[in-house]
Image 1 (cartoon, rainbow, N blue to C red):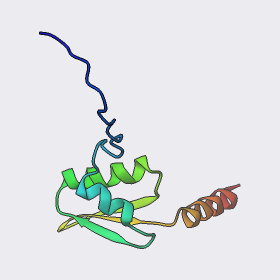
Image 2: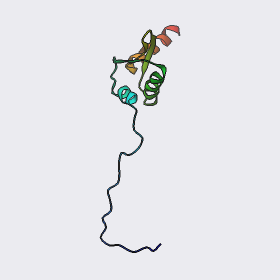
Image 3: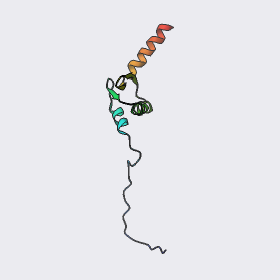
Image 4: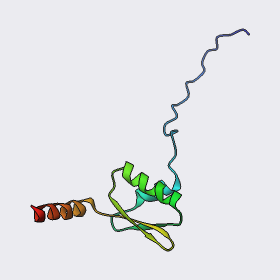
Length: 91
């Protein structure tokens, strides 16, 4: 194999944004605002949603229902105030 030198070949642009793609469950979880909820029909989807919210440090709460699992996005400030109120009441 022989190599030859070529001239006037432009350098291609860098490929930004070619990393891992978010799953559709993760995209939905990140779009949720405090007070929104999503119904997860099975435990696999439920785990994906809560793992995404946990990784991005978004407060959430969840409950099991007859249809599956329901996950609510909550306002972290209210949860912290509630927690502080309980701690202050016990001291």
